[in-house]
Image (tube, rainbow, N blue to C red):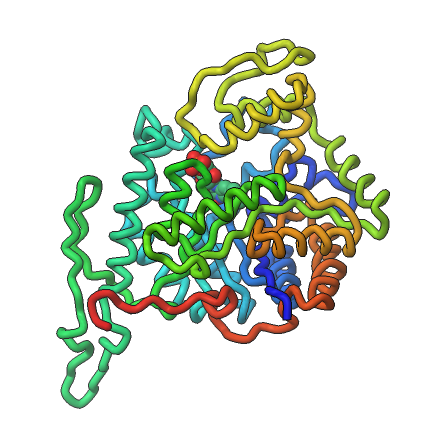
Length: 439
Ligand SMILES: Cc1cc2nc3c(=O)[nH]c(=O)nc-3n(C[C@H](O)[C@H](O)[C@H](O)COP(=O)(O)O)c2cc1C
């Protein structure tokens, strides 16, 4: 039996591609319309996906209105409210929400995820992000975005507080003894009393321990600090490697870091984001991708490039190479990848804008068979444990994947034909964490 892969579906925005909402036959409003989202998550569940993933940003994209006006991301549901609603129309698929350690509070986060885990009967996951978009600070009364290194120090303490709060109650704390009138056993309550550099949180959490013990911990940072945090804490990584060689290096690095901190490398699943365009022939798939890319305006592409580089490159000669640009305090890994690509290829600013504006990361474009071949190679060569799939548009691009690629993966024994357990931990093969205060 070959090793099986795990599949997440990246659904906020419903497609990362700026042209997605304009593709012929696409639902232009799907990002912000409950009925289509219900239909999409049910389709993903029927295809036995591990999880439905909601990215989140606490500001609109940091670009001028002239470029922003072309983006379908400006109106999206808040992840918890949407996933709470979707938890009621699904039974098995995992529900991963993003919450920021820079702009949220650990008590709020612990409570909301515990709530979602109970509402969904054990299907919640927390994508821990430190928030790269510097504009976010202006929505929270701060002039300056916290520095990259400080964001990660804070993230580690945030994680310790959240997981400590989830362990506030033993699993059997609530005796609800009607005769004696005792609702909970005080010996099974732990008050955290956390006092640290960034947070003072007394506890306990005012909700029972999550069904999964802890919701699944997901992480997506790829910088040095991001990798280290992931190695110490994460159970899933949404990676951003764009080639198999990079994927293998990233995989080996993070799993070695885990061993160094005493964790079993199998306790973390690495799922790179993969943009997948399916055609009945290779030529048709390429045509779809080209058509999609042609729907991205230069004004939008140049701004996406400026975001990726965290530097306004709109004043440079569009037909010249990328000049040297100063260091940045935003997301480091995305920026480094783009600079390396520009240097290696000598691409012009216009070419870089076209690439970033239309999605520059890992893409599988081909037939169900060639896509399955590529996915299989990543799995076999330890470039990943599966993928966080991004669809080119919905519903067509998503349906192509679930109706063509998934059966091909199943036929090869690379993906489940049915769910075995009921929680997100079950799907991912992760054990339920013991309560550090009671077990
Ligand atoms: C697949 C994927 C999904 C991500 N989702 C989010 C998100 O929802 N919200 C967010 O603020 N950042 C998100 N990020 C960004 C990461 O959390 C992180 O900020 C970024 O990868 C840079 O981290 P680094 O500075 O450690 O390299 C995502 C990254 C990837 C690769």
